[in-house]
Length: 278
Ligand code: BJW
Image 1 (cartoon, rainbow, N blue to C red):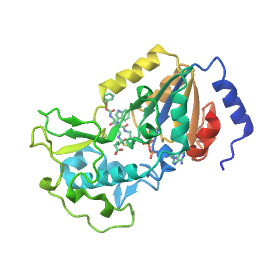
Image 2 (spheres, rainbow, N blue to C red):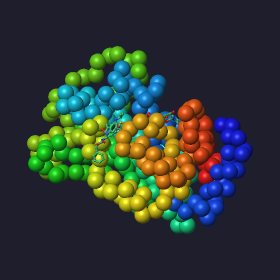
Image 3 (tube, helix red, strand yellow):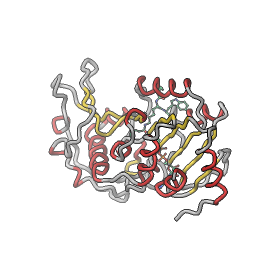
């Protein structure tokens, strides 16, 4: 059990239940799903086999070796489908159904675990897309499948052989394009995961929805959950809230010594979130 000082819990409870706390924005990162067994991006868990996850999450990597990147994402789809939402996802989902609070969750996670915890879908933005969305890479084709849960996607992408073992230096099989999923609409384009890679634009619909929420409401409280806060523009929302005088509560397994937050809940957020939101 994480040890949260009782003053922290009390002052947080007092604020969140007060009439000064009408609007809450939550920003989620990989740390929230780590208690569900899914690896984070940075730190010791950030490797898939001997590849750095960050290096595989780029358009360059896909262009260079789509078979390798597809094997990485097939493994991630398989793992996410096998994982279960944890008590942290559930506590947030519960908050999302509280009609007395103006609430929005921006998740950077692509694993679908918030949805499966029954988070209010009107109040959930998947800023970095979804593992279960497929898009055609052909610029002239608009094909998009927002919810494809097939596992495996093709015979060659059977994830049961794609283990997460950072010491595994054994080469993966090279997969030529004909072994990878193709677009059913244009029939020529390779499909790709519908996630946002580095250097790519986020969906304007998602960015606009977030901006609108922040413009229309004064965010009284922001919950920053299991994220390193390094990736833009997700991280910029924290500064916007701070600059507007909103309070920030950070839920992270690591202590932030440069802390200027209103509250810091140090520990596994699948435990600290339910304690704080109880
Ligand atoms: C626990 C825990 C437990 C562990 N309990 N805690 C301006 C300034 C600087 C840079 C840029 C800039 N503009 C653009 C850039 C470039 C780039 C960027 O931000 N680079 C920085 C790294 C410097 N940004 C982009 O390229 C973005 N695109 C863009 O800006 O386009 C312009 C545009 C903007 C707006 C509209 C239109 C156009 C795109 C960024 C896409 C990021 N994509 C990825 C991959 C997604 C697909 C996939 O999943 O494979 O998203 S990268 C990766 O990082 C993934 C994550 O969502 C994201 C954030 O990581 P996260 O979630 O924070 O995870 P970790 O591992 O970093 O941290 C885990 C945390 O949890 C740690 O703190 C742990 O301590 C903690 N933890 N266990 C509580 N149990």
